Image (cartoon, rainbow, N blue to C red; front, side):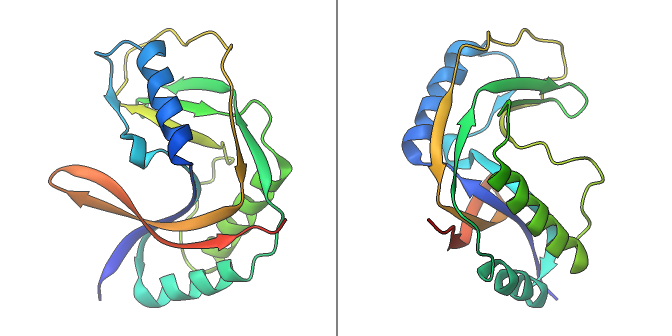
Length: 175
């Protein structure tokens, strides 16, 4: 039976992706880590792992039933997790709508047999990978904002040694 590596997440508007990539180029040395491509910048809500078609269909049907208002997302924090080598962009104060949506999706995923990390949800966008050495973080004088009006199901695909995320489906958040 064929599986696909899936996750629920928030896609970022193209203009915001480009702003973040420009800021990253100014804020971090070019020779550290591996930058995540602009098209791959996203915020994961619930990682599902390798999922069979039937389970993916069931999770999509559950996602389609979610009724929750949209929210504004402000990205104004950055950090470094040395162990996995990740430099991230996040939010100092996560909006309640974001936390509720992630909790709901993670709960549905767990009830349907998708292992969920015991770590608390830390909303972030991965900027760089492979950064295992200490680095100086930029001053906290940055802020990027966007309105979140939908969430999506993505497939993580390896193509020619590169990871890319393919958007499979999206569901609106109410006004």
